[in-house]
Amino acid sequence: MEYKSLLLTKENGLGIVTINRPDVLNARNNELSHEMYDMFTAIENDPEIRVVILTGTGKSFIAGADIREIMELGSVQVEAFLIMARRARDRIYGCKQPVIAAINGFCLGGGLEVALCCDLRIASETATFGLPEINLGIIPAGGGIARLVKLIGMARAKEMIFTGDTCDSQAALKMGFLNQVVPSGKLMDEAKAMAARLLSKSSIALNYAKKSCNSGVDMSLAAATDMDENYFCRCFASEDQKEGMQAFVEKRKANFKNR
Image (cartoon, rainbow, N blue to C red):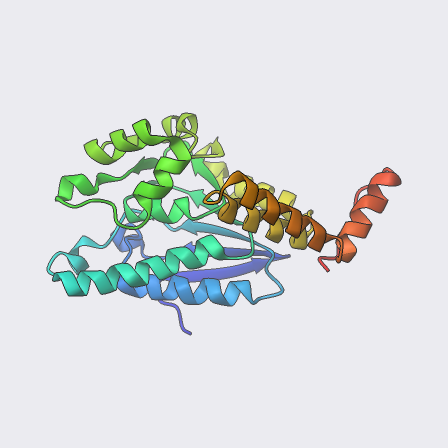
């Protein structure tokens, strides 16, 4: 597939996906959703990519939905728009590789909902966050409500959703939305440093850990523990488990082969 709104580069196991619609602050339209779904499907099946960074060009991560595209849609057409957007988000959330959001500038509405689907979130100190849909006479419809409530709690999520107010990176960090806040000029350096830490781990174990986190959050404690035990046992069928434990006994750094 030829991509108009996305760029992909590869660097020693790392895949960097860049949203490239700077003229509209990387606003999400239907075409972008199609491309994101297709690209993350390809990434998951690419043995050269073991960790992903998702970022945006210019002054924005994603500034929300492209309002000019959807403002005249009827209920049937807007439902189709939402279905495709959800497929793209679910593809990111379910991608077997860890996905790091490197958030520059605006991360609003549908952009914040995409960031919520990433596993880790690192933001520049000048980034801006919010769910401003209420100001347009609508509500967040891309998992933003459900995922934000789980991540930062009901009271804070309701305040963001009901008021439509934005917040800066430090506030987002205190709420638990972000993992790190870094100087603007060092955003990609810090995201790549985090990626390097993950690339040093076993991809097999990381994949199982991601599945356990994503699925277990909606399970009972007993069911989630059963799942964790199952994935733990599966690790023992890998060469990485043997290498990791042997390295521990020998007091050296493990050299994982991801098999």
